[in-house]
Length: 631
Image (cartoon, one colour):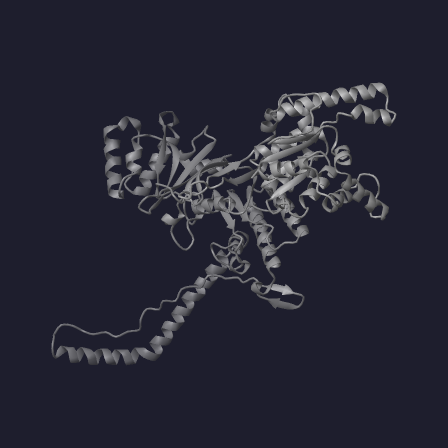
């Protein structure tokens, strides 16, 4: 079983959100948007609050309710899952839903959806075992034709009801059932089915390397090492020590204790007859120690404690331990799923190491034998592979207008199917499939993390835009979290824009109208039929792009700056030569100085736009203002 969907209400900044999960789910978005809060809400659902219970301060600021709800839907149930869940997952049902509540009075309960025999609800919700037995006996007496098993204890009654329901699926109805035995940690019913391991950004490797029930290393050792034989020997040794210790006591103290017992009895007899006093050694409270293991690091020939290692190595050890935990989980007798939830997996890692972590965890998650699900909250493009944009969940936080409430948080996602639907009439499905790898992998890694994106056709367009924005007096794009992304061609603007806007990332488009395309091709000696075809294709593409952007369709649009896009009548380069001669002069000066080739060179174009002796024409200022208005 795996997490398919999560609904969170009133938990910190997450007032009411619903999120779909995949085999790998990557949470991205600005700082403070709520990425880690999603993982912490799930950690509370699965593992409970660590160190203290949730309080009203954990509720969404400004909320009228103090009740917190986390709902988790699982799918992909295995036969082992169904057996353990019983009436919670009867035959034919492929999903299971569970809720956890922090009630208004501070109490916490967990419930689950179930197919159940309605008269059994009163029994399962009985206040105590005596009440449960009374109701069950009344039911079996008044409806003997149903063939209920005789049962006299709480466990026997629960087992009898579950067995009956499994054999009478046609008489069951949907219900939300509250239980006291339900849960995911310790010895709870779900413990062997789903294990949620949360690695926070501040988690210390030295703590997780200790041999404990809840630590990562402890879980690995529990699955990898059979302590039973050693524990039995230690238990026997403990009993032997207790026997020998008692023999020592008897040999050294028995005669003395008998004497003082007799003396005390005689003294007491002077005041009260018929009683004796006995002084003896106290029963030994010697418990067999549990087998314990310790982890250290051999650095060359020096053995050190983990805490003495650098932060990078400690984080590496944590990720490696998680990998090993997943592998041992897969080979253990319990075939339940393990979910690795990692906050900032790139923390303290150099880029190559971060990339290696991402590759290893993806390989593990995609291995069907591992029963592993992975989710991150990350700021690193190494853990968000753009070709898997359908795994990305972009967490966005709306501008706060009412200070009496928390800002609204939304979680955006998309899919190949969703993108094809949005681009229907603009790009064919086969074209989307062909473009996805190149556009996403090579053009959008940084854009996925931006607060806003400027989409341009090519590298020189990007260079000029960035250079002009970096001139003194202009507001920094980088400081505002705005990225300029070139998409590798005008026809790729559709796909890039669709993916980013579906993920809730504001986009501004700058493109060329190519009005003089025939003149340029003719000057290069191109064939007349090729020129005619290129001119026709450019007209069609202009009309489609303008329609997609919500503007009036034209064959050759004039240069224009609008709220969502800018079109340059011909090309940006020809426009710069005509309208910003200082840019052309600076570019030529750099080429003459041997700093670059006369051909298109993004570094020279950017430097010329940044260093030109005069400011760019007003059209560029208008573009930059529109870009900043995205946020």
